[in-house]
Amino acid sequence: MLLRGKIARKYWKAFMYLLLITAIAFYISKNDQSLEKNREAAIKTSALYKINNRRTTNHDVKQETRSVSVLNLTNLQREVTKKQLPKLLIRNLTIRNHFELELSDKFIDDYFKDKNFSIFPTSSKPEVRHIAFLKVHKAASSTLQNMFFRFGRKRNLTFVFTKHPNYFSRSISSHIPLVPPKVGQGYDILCNHGVFNHSTYSSLLPNDTVYIGIVRDPLSVFISAVNFYSQESQKLGYLTRIKGQKLQKLIHRPEVYDRSFFSYTKNVMARDFGFPQTFDNSIIFQTLKELDKIFTLVLIVEHFEESLVLMRRYLNWKLQDILFLPNNVFVSRVKNTPNLPRTKVITGLNQARANPWYGQRGILRDPYRDKPVSKSDLSRKDVDQFKMRNKMDYYVHSFFTKKFWKQFKSAPSNIEQEVTYFKQVLERLALFCNQTDIGGNVKPLIVQKSQWNAEFTVSADECLYMKMDELKFIKILRHKQGSELREANHFRYPPKQFRLSVDDYRKMSPQQRRMYQQQIIMGNNKPNEVGHIQMADRGFGRGIYSRKGIVKRPK
Image (cartoon, rainbow, N blue to C red):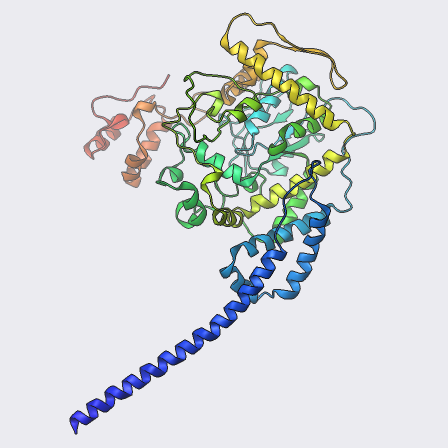
């Protein structure tokens, strides 16, 4: 009897398991049918909302693509409800990318529809000398800053400098304390790194100041930042901790490797323009409207020469005022390594683009030591994910790019001929400055008169200023206007041989870190003997905390 009961219970359990498996199979099959419907809708929607970024010769999006974009939005509202959208995102991430980019495109088109883009006055005006330039990270901003430095130096203009060597502000709430000039009254130009705050900028500059910004393709900014801040002299802590596949890890796992809302590799352009920390589209678009009213010109790195010619015309500058050599450039490598001598060279823009082994400040990099990343390292899935990760930068770039081309078209008809002529002058300038770098007596470069400029000459000294490092140029300007930094005014690091490595610093306790920072801030004028002994006793006998020697004051 007992045996018969055990057998019955076994059969009953088997029957219940079978019933449970059947129910699960039925649920999965039903769910597969709904997923199949969602997949078909996703395919249809993806094909319908594919974005065509191809431009015509005059940089316009084709008219038929624009009409399809409007049709896409109406169909998207009809066919894809808010409840269906999350399921579609699971199946196809590109739909979400296209959906949000289409929304931004529609907003930009509607906003610019009836707007007047003519920025050129009917009568002649004097050259503009009051300028606020937003120096956006990794967007050719050092090259443009050098241009403003040279312009102001020739005319004895006054620059805004702070107690930091080359930053104006690091947050939107306040700026670094100023170092007022001893020569001149008031300020004329502000062009150092800073987070934009209109009330702060306008409180220091005259009312007729022209606000100028610059933007670049967000993916190019991202790759350039990863390469630049991975150099030995520019290393950032969160980038040095990534071992291999930096781009992919930063894109797909930002919660681990790039946790801040804004960083040098995450929406850095939006941060520099002063955007709030939110992904709310209504707030983002409202901020774009406010910036549009403030910034008269926002230049485009991908069309740098066109941007400079447009800026020259609006500011009523001369052609020699916008001549430049690439500054602080980092270009990715190619597969085939050329056998080139490790010597310092000065390159023009075209040569820097053509020879990818020229690195920061024109110094030829060692291709066997540096391993820079490039767009070729990314797949289509990586790029789609990056567009979602840095969508604020894509909004900023798309908005100001469309504004720029509308302003460019509103200029007189011969502006394209001037751009062509300007590129020819830049090629001659690059060859001339390369000759001056080699040495010897070189005659000045003579640029003949044209319909856009009077005859002028370029000397070897001007080439030196064009290729001058940012910190060195700032030091010259500070000395000229009496805004020098005193030894105690800025944060001073110990000599390289006494600096702790990142790993040693991470091993420190909070108390040890505080003592390390205090020792640096003291400038080693009065070394803390007790601190040296304590740190040496705790196992940190290297460099600054060694019992044997006290760090000398850096020269």
